Length: 209
Image (cartoon, rainbow, N blue to C red; front, side):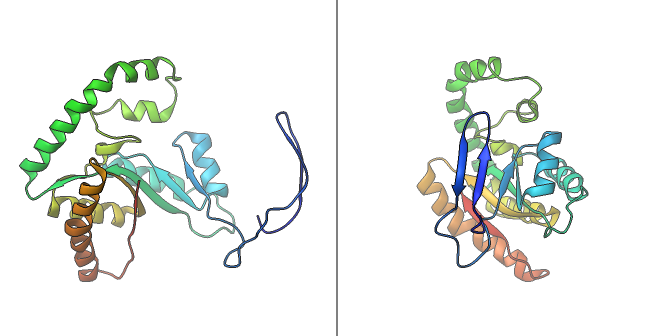
């Protein structure tokens, strides 16, 4: 990735005298994002990753995962950064958000037969599948299990709590996408920025997916 030429011979493909072109003018290599919560995945991201994406789950669980991976050997690499996948359901009041969540949950129930098939065809030892069975949820990769369901103030406060635990990047899900993303931009982001400006200077990155 830094312009060197590569030779590789493996079980599935061979590469001879390959060089990635064009190379970046701004950095030696792209940032490496890693997902997965198994022990091998944690070792991999600690050794070679730049950002570890964690599936949506409660704050205490996320804080424990961050502490575990941050304590693993990393050599001379820069400090590891952390991201979180989450589904947002935010409304003016908690009751309105809960009603919207229940509606989405009922719509998601239509996919139950497909989820049964998915579960049958997945190794039960896969950590992500074990995590997903802990609580009902809407969305992928943990979705609403991260707890970003509530009033605008509640969702902003929870995001700030995740940030305080070490989360720098949120990969967010919305439904319907455009309307809810606009709502998030208008109602949540200003609240999060206000909380940050009132406390220690820090920058919170947002990514929608």
